[in-house]
Image 1 (tube, rainbow, N blue to C red):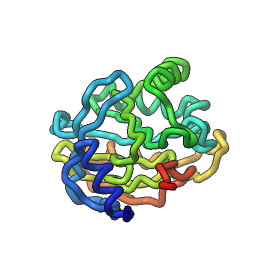
Image 2 (spheres, rainbow, N blue to C red; image 1 turned 180 degrees about the horizontal axis):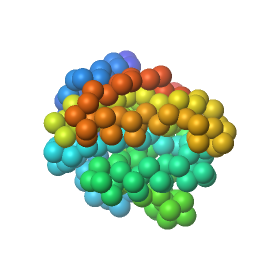
Image 3 (tube, rainbow, N blue to C red; image 1 turned 90 degrees about the horizontal axis):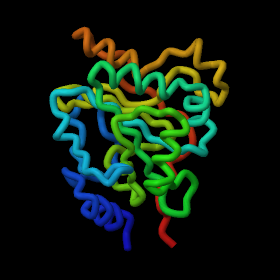
Image 4 (cartoon, rainbow, N blue to C red; image 1 turned 180 degrees about the vertical axis):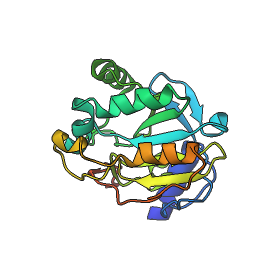
Length: 206
């Protein structure tokens, strides 16, 4: 089976629309629509949140870069700050079964409770369809979608590409900057940065 065939099957099985390749999603373009199942078994779609800002956060609880932002409380603080302002925040797990970072629904819900995390929902993407749709590369990899459904930011969470939690204090948070600028009617700058972190652990065919 070819790579293109595998991507087509994965995307089709998760009812992700439109069917596109794993080419980089471009800032300024409409964000690819998706339908996904969250850790509580509920269906979540991008379309149902049209009119709201949406943040997508790719996650792997074992990744040192992810741990930097969760063990410090930084990611949870961002989730709470922005969801309180009406932003929809989806944590996305695209690790394949058996791969590093894979979580069952029960395990993920326990993790969210233990870490006092506050996303709107955690989207489980074990086949990697949603990850490939957005060409997510790292954990974390961040995307911000505006109320009109346009992608306005893609890339790193902040300007300090390290695993040291002490660096958070002096870092420029690109996600907050993008939301603040857009909500104030300003252009987002930077609108794209190079994401940093661990590679997303997609399924690799035998």
